[in-house]
Amino acid sequence: MPAYYSITTYISKNKINGNTFEEFVDVLQDGGFTFKSGYREFEDNTITEIIAWNTEKIGDDFVLGYDEHYSHDYKQSLWEYDNLSEVRLYIVNPEESDFFEFVIIIPEDDFIEYKNGNEKYDSKVIRDIKQLAVRIWKLEYVEVIQTAMELSSGDAYVEDIKNGEFPSAEPFAIIPDNILNKSYKKKFKTTRIERNGVLIEKRRRNHVKNNIVAVICTIFIIILPFLLSYIFKLKLTKDGWVRQELVNIEGVDYRYQGFDISNEGKTIAFIDDWKVKEIPEDPSHTFLIIKSFSNQYYIIKKDYVIPESGKVSCAYLNGERTTWEPFLDALTEILDSEFVDGNEIIISGFNKAQYDQNFKSVSIGYEDCPVGTDHSIYCIGKLDSKWIIIFRDELDSLNNDQKRAIYYELDSKYEKAFEESGYWQ
Image: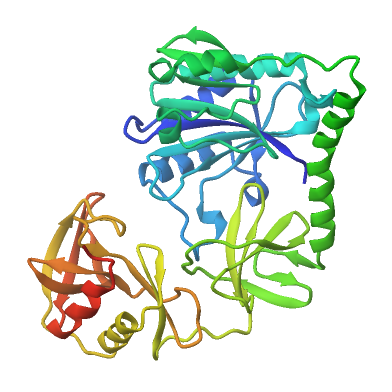
């Protein structure tokens, strides 16, 4: 897999309409893009089919679930542009983000060379990409456009850019003019464009001349990260393969499975073009993550049987892990109880991360399971000073803004464990 250069357009969810993706594609085509095919098993899809699929997903604010196959996600597409070997377009919708990310990626080797410690871009290609970005900026729902190379520090969060952090500009970016300040003019060439935008471009650095020590140091600084990265990858490269139904790592089969974790750990292996990441709470490596440039999947050992009952060994509240025994003991008792005579409630604007700061989404692991695999509890929280629980199988969507649920009141004996856990203020 080559290193990819990316042009990422951040689309404000508050400003989109029913034709957002189609309008974006129209701008690409007006700028010289020619549709080639869909991507992977969708290569026979037409651009009309891909637009219709992605438009529906955007309207639903779709986020791929942990245990969903990638074929349910936004569809990617391949394009022809400026005689480049590969041009791919895909959509990213980070969970709980205010922005869709429309990403165009191109192999870096197609138009970037390294010379005297500096990146040297093919002047025609980068000029055309820059002009295309200016066209894209005219769409009223575009908030920021960033460019990046695969080994650069990556894109900055839009909110961080608004608070003063520089965007990724390799070698340019486009930002709203209301966040422009003096620090930008020291680092970038700035050009005002339509719709109150500013095209920022990295200032060229002077080449080091007649200074042998400086040249050697520059070369060493450039080569060292690549050399260390190559040695690191070579050391961790393992036998195995990644297929649609299974993953094999040094003879051990893993299956795809969704689960909750607090964060991902270090890279422990490379399988072809995939990084294998460990889970900090699981030193046995029964649970792992595999990542490529544009995809990420959770996997577990094929022969591992996930406990579905017993003592609760861990819980995740809004994604934060706890192993505090009094709280886990309370959950174990609650899940062993029978609930009858529930009450109906209509919840508006509810999501599992926020609801009046009184409700917490809950996932749990039983017995020896170190991660959250059981999502039967939708949430636990306080309603009118009473502790209640809502189960996922008794929750129905009425529309995009409302959900109908059955809630059950919990015994007051659990109040101390909940309140002393520190998760409810």
